[in-house]
Image (tube, rainbow, N blue to C red):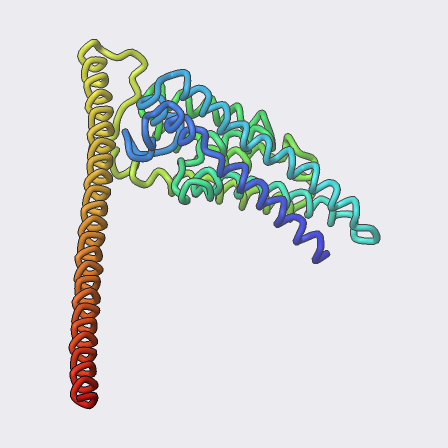
Length: 316
């Protein structure tokens, strides 16, 4: 049983690492747009990708974020079934518990990976599309209902955040009301049903928690609306903003290059001064040695002369 628990945690870790692959951040850097977390709403998700990078990259990000949830649940299902099958001699319901817990932990882990990616400084998105992928993989009919509710909310209020919050709040309600109609294990086992309900509330709260700044902006009337068609003035303003951002990045890059050049110049000057000081020092030592040699030579000459004089006196 202990080994089974460890294996489930390892599967959840794999799900977290899958969630940590944030395509929004990767695309913004590949397209030389800098870090998307420093632009627009500063969120590494589909909506901000749409504003900063455009429709094509935003669609790719949305699809990948959903696929992350689907892939994580697929891996969790295969592994949970394999782990449960190895528990011979255990109660029959234990396999269902292992399966359910494995799915739920991997679901929460992949969303956490998207929100707090290990590969990008633990600063990611808000987990809406990844949560949708998880829900679709667990029960596609409930997932489609949540998606439809979110789309309707966005169409009515023109706020992506409102649509996301509506879908998040609706999910645990659907699990409580109609979840059992789609899953016989859910319907027949009270403990598994309680786990599903608890999981749905936790997942919804994770999405709501990541939207707390959006909720505050909605209250203040400063939340950005999603407009499907932009006016010419808005397009001009957006293009101007992009140009200013590009110019700022170029200016920052130029400043870095100039700073590096100045540092290199100062380093070369310091090196030249040190070499010059060392050369002067060596030259002074050389002159001292030469003078010492001259003095020694003169002393020897005087000594020889005195020796010769003393010898000549003795001979006389």
